[in-house]
Amino acid sequence: MAKSRTFLIVAVVAGLLAVFWPQIEEYVLTQCPIPYFSSRRAAEYRTGRDNQATNDLNNGAELRVFTLDELKKYDGTDDSLPIYTSIGGYVLDVTSGKKFYAKGAQYHQFAGQACTRALAIGSLDLKDITDDTSDFTPEQIKEMDTTLEFYFSKYPKVGTLAK
Image (tube, rainbow, N blue to C red; front, side, top):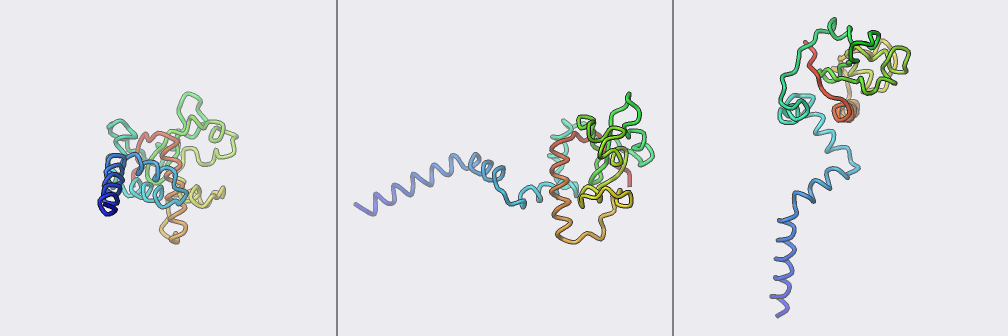
């Protein structure tokens, strides 16, 4: 009798887990304080392996390819144009953060620029405003992935940066 009761309890618990697993998994992934999950997601964005996520962010639209010279036109000095910045090879529309990126604002030097390195290491130095991250340590790559995740979730992608 005790064995069948135990078996029944285990079967009910397993059944409930099977039914509610997608909700449990989503909750764990969104509430987990360990940056592994968000870093993995950012790494997928960064390397272009997560095509579905890229399409979701752009509603399936093709992304425009910007040269660095074209990107510089969107630096916040012309009020008729949006403000763009490039991070991780993607051009993001940061106009909604105008108070940070507009002319005279704290992060204006990032507007119209490719600035993955500066944003990943938290630097405001002009020498760090570049996409070159080839010398990053594993810790810096992890921080860069967290930074990419933040920017990709906050600002819409409008293009990619030509290599």
